[in-house]
Length: 221
Image 1 (cartoon, rainbow, N blue to C red):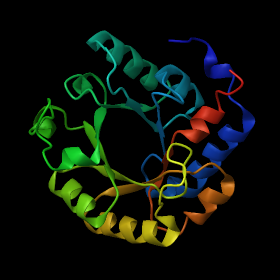
Image 2 (image 1 turned 90 degrees about the vertical axis):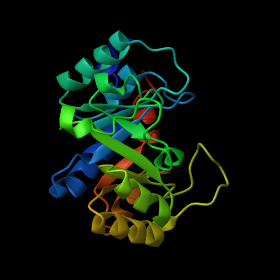
Image 3 (image 1 turned 90 degrees about the horizontal axis):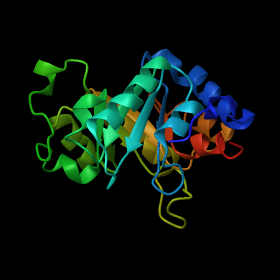
């Protein structure tokens, strides 16, 4: 994995994330969840370098050949930045991170592939997040004892050009549903400008999640 990218963060992305943390930080939970992407930003070390301290990185390691050592290494790097590392796509290795992220389809059959039914009895601090695109998914997430949902796609995204997106009003409705069920809700998808962040401040979301603002921080790296 590339080293030394921490000093090469571009000002626009760092400013955007700082503003997001300021706007959403009052909720008492991390305001920003950054995500890696196999095509756009595959390296978790580079993603961590663009993520401000006190937040969460979801390492989307689908199909990667990883070891316990790999996961523990990145988890230690996250801890050094006062961040948390959640692993997606490698549930059997997630125990070596600070938590795991589930695709929405995993909410139907969540106790497969190493998902720990009694995780809280062994790791009370183990965090589980899940993707959610509807009220049904949010209810399933609550039933699965997920801690937070990533509601998406909020705006049009680079990953899925032309695909339908939720918009602010629909996102706010889903965030209220999540909150009523005791879940933190993060807005994900197409959040690339300060204006995007401002539009989400009255929706009830806990914070924002995404790839683009981390990717922007690495374009000059």
